[in-house]
Image 1 (cartoon, rainbow, N blue to C red):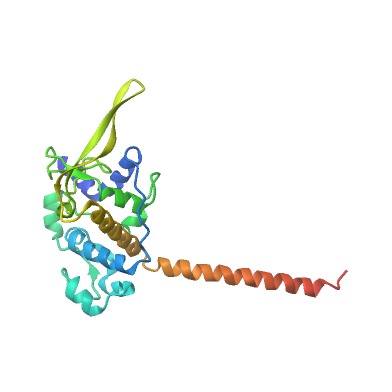
Image 2: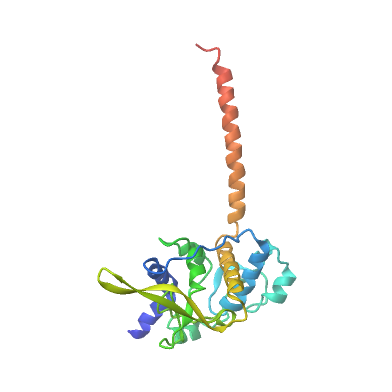
Length: 251
């Protein structure tokens, strides 16, 4: 029974985390970087180095990264760690059988994670941006980590070397006759290889890439949609004037 419960947590953890944070910690607004090629390239590098070890992106092929300005050679030299062909999909480096033994279930696929995690607190990007920045050390957990956006998270903080170790600070307040803890801020215990600002920017890049990966053609779709609407507006005006000209002598 315990293994089954842990399996469900591992498979649907981010979903549960989204619902948990809706009723607790407010989500921070994620920066919109889906049109920033440099940011997307850095996000792709972070994804391959830190996420693809356990999480697959089965609906994304490496050669699609050419859409964000990378060449086949750059992809082969810098991003192909789990396969040898640029046309292959982004499969996790971890063995599914080992993942099941270690975590009780395979980590979820991240192909459309940014599109599927929206809620009352904001967009899926807002949730991911908050989630990736609210890990803290908790020795009572098996992994040694916990998360404010997703309490009791099963996933360890794989980016801790970049962010360092932090602990949350809470204020005690009384509401309706009960004492409640209100999040106030962070205390940096040990520094990471990045400053807090650099880490936030890096997480913005990673979340931007996850947004782009969920629908690589989104920006093209929006751009074409704007021109289509402008064309229809002009066509409507021409049709209106033609109609007036055809019927002006009809009584």
